[in-house]
Length: 308
Length: 308
Image (cartoon, rainbow over all chains, first blue to last red; front, side, top):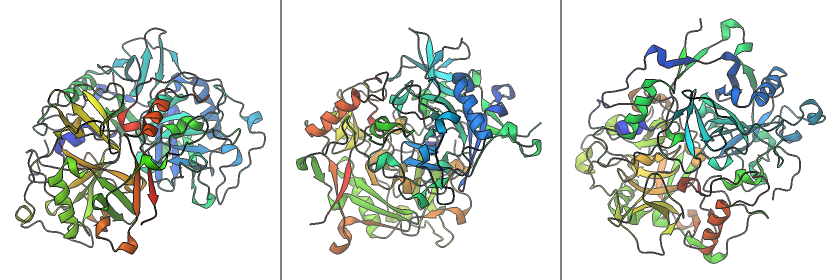
């Protein structure tokens, strides 16, 4: 419970629905997950994106799209993104970063896209993969309007089709993916990150393979484009915010590394927190909300830990 | 269609899912709604919130909560909010503004909450109302996991229960509402605006009575609190962003007024655009997305017009 009396906020109800970094509050305050409910994130899967507003930390679900994950790591190591821009940003939808075939110039960093296809040839689509065996997949526990089955794997929101036994990452706020042209196998270097209401219609039609662990509030500060003009591409180059630098945590000097843990979504603690969300006991609720949960509204805790 | 070739963005699919201010794109570009598909917003229902990052424009659904709308207008006219702050801001969830019973001081504007209850006594809850007659209500056209029926009224996302014939505003990104304490009839002066994935569990348990027409990107820039510390209340007073000024459009001098139009959600144009969203024909989609739409993911166009 929130103990401060007579203040006009939304009490436990609000915290209970807030985003990834926030705790799931029970009636008696946030229970602490036991030590074994945490998974250490592989530093090879930790992507750091520096902007002038701060840093964004993305965890890659590399096993969902190994080709794209390898490409992204190669691009980062080639310093491909450093100095490029978030050149297409649509409020409530996505930020898109990269070279934009030479359209993504910033004031200080004019770019050309010559030989782009030769250097970074189009990738084969990885829209979905064979479903992972249980118990890695933890079902959300209720129906979903957009997919036959939804749940979590390693903290990532995942949808499945039991008929063809395929699964894919869901487009929630914070989902990291590669953009593409009209052909399926056309992704090459451009990435996007969802910053608004889950655009579920993109599920399984683009290669999504990561999620933001830290720094959504950084992405929310990026300069917007006008969605009615050139599909949201920011026309005034001087207004585009730069991708100052991208790096892999595993490439940093040991002394500069930071470690993160994500709550194990296959843990009993997480299952209990799902049920607590489903049937809130806080006196704040006069009317029990629907017991159905939104896969994109369930927070999965993240914390920093000391590096070994 | 987007005509620029060989660029790596998400083409029509992305625009089609973007937020309120964006057009619904068909396969041949954005069709223009006919003149009679627009409704002029009542300037008595237009709330202007000035921040250092820009202005937010909210339309009140006053008929859903006449008591709260009257209170809000009275507070604005008393300059109650001017100089107070967005003192509780949780990324991906809500911004909350007001006096916070004296906790919402800013560096330049220390506030006290003496006699607050006497001056602005708690309001009777207006969580829902008797359902409006058709055809004002335009059904979304598919099931919803959180309510028996959902659709639009005057551009606002609305849920209904056909059993008791009541209806209420849905918590989508941009929804404007009054916060309250644990009791139902405890809202007084504090407001909040949703800035993240739709927190549907708050539906019909708080008094929601407006939506942002312009300026979501402004709200997204506001200084965040730490959701793990005092429920997201920003502890460092100097970091809180001020509510510089709030005003009603109808109170501005005529020469300073601006007029807005919202697409009529009961129009044929809107019905057609819903169907186009449901069954996209763009070659961008290899796999038809689920025909189910998310009530909070459907844009309702807004435009500025010349003042008469």
